[in-house]
Image (tube, rainbow over all chains, first blue to last red; front, side, top):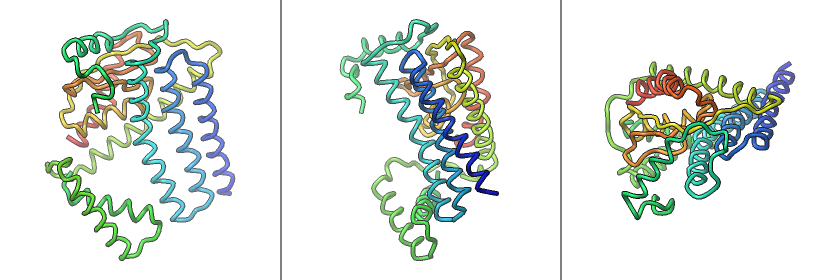
Length: 124
Length: 157
């Protein structure tokens, strides 16, 4: 019985991974794509790892899976933050559909006030 | 967080990673945790009580709810025949004051509906948030304030 439950949860997880992949292709710019790449993948991986827990029903498997979910939730937003930040500073800009940008003016001010801090590397 | 809490949670994570739970393992975990804390001591500063289980629970509940809503929303956007989004970046003045609070808030923003933290200002007071639908910037701000910031402040500040 729990095998069917595990299969269902596994499918839901895999489905959200698919959505994340489609999002990467269909959305217009780096920032919108990061939405798909962080939210749907954490949810998808959560589903897949939950299915692992349900299928094996062993304490040592469960603890590893729970830890993996925990660290994924911790690291995915950090990665998304760094990628979008680096993208804004160095790479392609916002998609033409973008309606509002309050970050650009801030960045311009920051660059004009401090010459040394206009590079990502010098921030670390 | 008090140092004792950090040491014990690191030891607990060690036990979980090993997957076996003997007393000896826990002792080894405590030793390793103490060693790590010894080197990173400057990063932690002592503060108030950590008996906030209720508020932390409330944060986890509201975070989980937002996470599910976020995924349904991404799902709707991605699977709709025509991508209709009005994205933009807005500045969000945060009332979180501790570095841990700001970090937790920024991470939660990324994992919840339609919003993504792009950067934090030099003085850690403004979070720049990319949103998929920015037709009403103040509604987005209000959503962050009520759904995430209040629980974060309650839980860790």
